[in-house]
Image 1: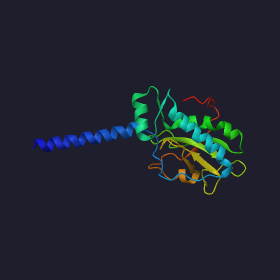
Image 2: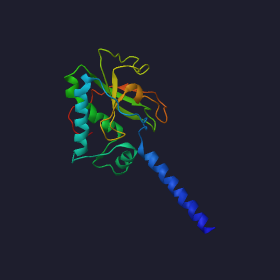
Image 3: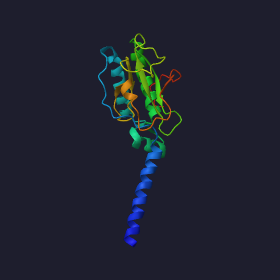
Image 4: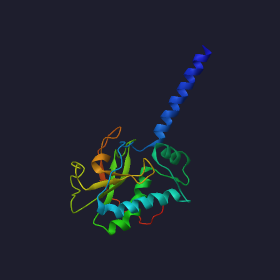
Length: 190
């Protein structure tokens, strides 16, 4: 009987630990879709994105983390630990600005599940000559719009908007665009 009680107590601790990790991690889990090939004229933005992510990971002043475990580290220990989805969003947006200014592409923010446990943020790049932002999220299929989102993997992952919008585990609040022009354009961590 005592052995059975110990097994039950051990199982209960594991479930509690799993629930705690899940609750502390925040950000919506995104669909597991393979990063996509991009349009050739977006290459300068892709290069700036890759450089920004690589520089962040080599930054000795901040410990950049990614994914749910990264969120847990940032939320529990804080300090110079960085890597919540909105940290990545701000860093990427600022990092790609020089390349954006040299191309016809534009960038803005994108979010899903605002105000919920599953809230997630990333950067959307689009070709304003071929894409109208009004209604873009209602009909993203075939559009020249890509999401730059390093949060999940800690790598410079680029997704077609239509792939990124595939339903995460839970969608409580539909995706919306965010104006990120208020961000300071220094390339320092948030």
